[in-house]
Length: 387
Image (tube, rainbow, N blue to C red; front, side, top):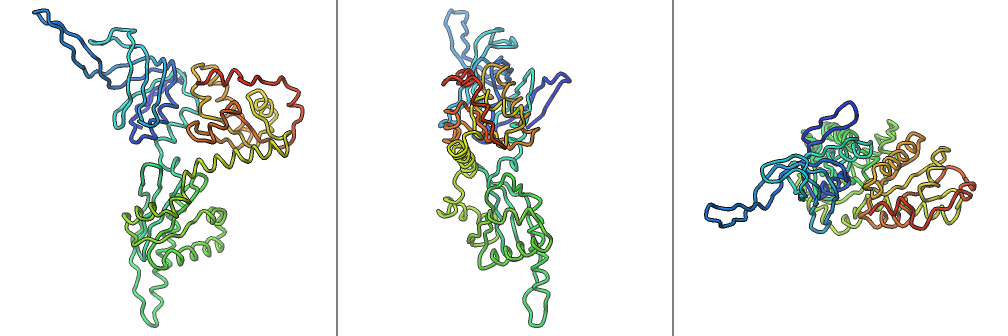
């Protein structure tokens, strides 16, 4: 995030740079028809010399287009935005068609007439690595620890603990005292930098028995102080071997086949579990599981939604009214205390949810009267409008 400029009417602009392929996926979900995109692009220009010869060349230009369509090539990480020129310049006339390919490490500005909460939340998530990191890692040895957040594409060091640990001496307790002070500092760093609502696994890696001793200390201290953040999430800690407490040792930890299996696609795994819970409810208690906008909206209006499952594909609809409809559903469910899970259409779980119109809900209590509502078509308007 390079900058933001907003007006009192809710319109505004974000200045952004995509630093990794995952950021282009976020941009794909943010840019919709009707928005204005400004970025560096290239345009083929023909020029005729005094002798009548024609020369074709590529000109590098800054251009603003009103978005008409957006295409994303996942395999090639290429985001192509098509539209019409919104500001006349030397090489492109006003209203002429132009395509912009957004690339990594190149600034772009996105302007919307209305920034809904889902869009601003996505910007915040994309720009804050702590909102996207499913995995945390503590690489440590006696007196040295690195606390990191790990995403699919990068590792970010959030804290370093470097303290002196006294040597073991016969008849002296200084070693144990300084070691416990070190462990306390590491535990404090974990609590400060690891968001357990998002992180699904915390690796504790070290040579020797340091990881086991620290883990025992942390659990005992959490019991003593009734630290719920640790006690409620102690199953998320995974103890693994590392050759040292230096940051470069994290690489050998992450490529370990056993660790790689345990950490495989952790966010997607959570989404799969949420969808499985919905399918189980649908089979065992069908009066508490519904899908399709009308049915879920009815349950939301009665504050009956316990868990809302919704695909990010619905927020890419070219129809602004349809997008507002789903934004309103998410906001109302959250205000009623429901757990809202936004599914990525690029994962298997998101594709399966798309077959159920892209929106589904588990309810707090049975609502058999929902079955009496008008049954939605097999291809409901909201599904048909979203490509």
